[in-house]
Image (cartoon, rainbow, N blue to C red; front, side, top):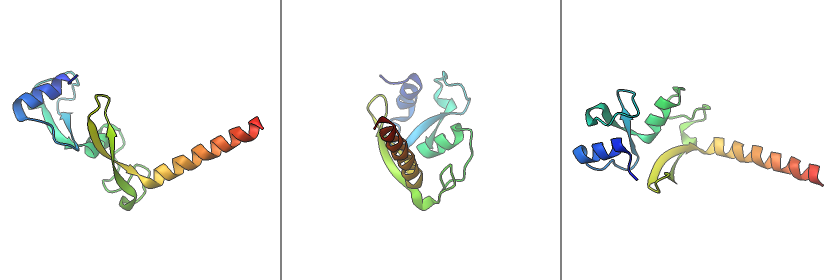
Length: 109
């Protein structure tokens, strides 16, 4: 399944390059007019749509750019998507998860 705005872009401009996404300049998600679409890097689109405008080169929690790692994930349609993740945030999330699981095991014993 291809979304209508992606099909309209592809018909006029060709495939969307890896690591890029389509941004609706008109802010109407249902719009399929290719003139209202533009290519943005995935991380820029995520930064713009999150409602939190954090500086490029750092994560949303303020960790340094050195902690940002490129990652490849699969979209719902199975196509590859590139983005960035903060290794410090991942490490902290794993730590919280492990602490929670330890506490659950302690309660069960």
